[in-house]
Length: 456
Image (cartoon, rainbow, N blue to C red; front, side, top):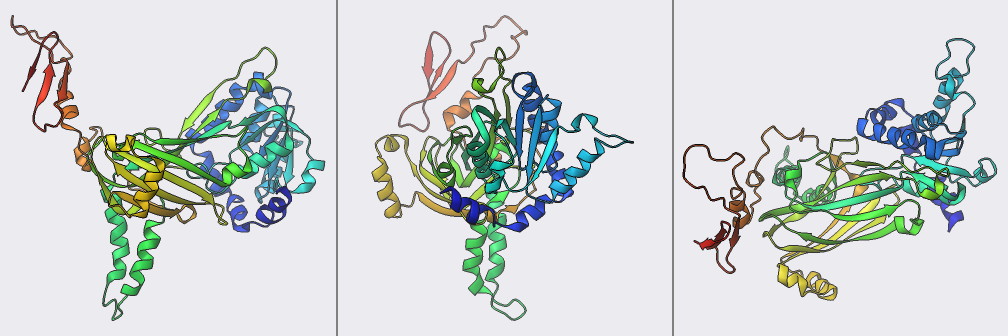
């Protein structure tokens, strides 16, 4: 219920969180994230004529005020910058400099922004802040939902956004994918094995090993990683910020059905998110169209300060190319401004998966099938790994990461026609069109060369 959330869950929640964001060094870290800041700048300024011009805007969790400043640049009539941390007073310094009698800076901001030093959930705000045409915010944490600021974004929508108004960002998408990362798993188990020493300055510390093992493998690892460590395409969970409810955010399930592309060892689950900035037509000035802006934190995209996250199994899972990983990942809020993430996953052959019902999956987990894995991770206990600095010029082959293509796909890599025609003589050159394996055979293949084909 709303009153319970306002009084208990939010208004008295974690003062250290707001202390952290009151420091300019942390605001600077976010501002210097070019991908993040330029995406917001483009989304707001490109939609200036269609959405922001002459409109009332709310900036939830305004921080340094940068989004409010962008909204003024885009022509907003007035911006209400809601900020609960000490950054609210620092924003006042910026706005005072816009109205000074000498040395005026950013004069365009004068009288265009009202700083509201409060949490958005403060009940009295409904008497102090009017309904607005658009709400802008950067309420995003690791894996989209960490820090639980999205709840404040949605609360602001329900209390202050006029019907048909716009939320920017408009949507987010969580991606989860199968991960093979032996180096990270080995590094993690090595840390845990510290506690297996029988004589650490004369002390046997083995009693600490079990809790240390649990601790290390329940801690998500934040940091960038190579896209070549992914064993299949991601499963997604989409969140529409115009329609999502508070209950939807507090607990949700992401169904998993990954098609494994490589034979190898799956060490856990990789995660990242995308953002969309697409204002609805109902929010725009008549006769105008929205400008859509998108941003991704995927391992194939430029790095952001959010980076990506890897969550490791306690016991890796051997998988074969063509198998399907089935199951679900549950994300549920905790009282640490974050989420508990639980997973139940099982590897099945392709045909077996098609014949396995959800009820049968449950029985596989209950029987502790050797191909099944369960895991529990605490997103607020994240640790950091910055060892990956980007791909070398020569992209490594999958086998460099101990992941192996099916033989027919491996052969097919060299089956395409040459880029340039043969210039050395009169002999006819026949291009191989495709290579396909023979069912139930590890050594026989059909090589198609146009109108005819041959078997080897």
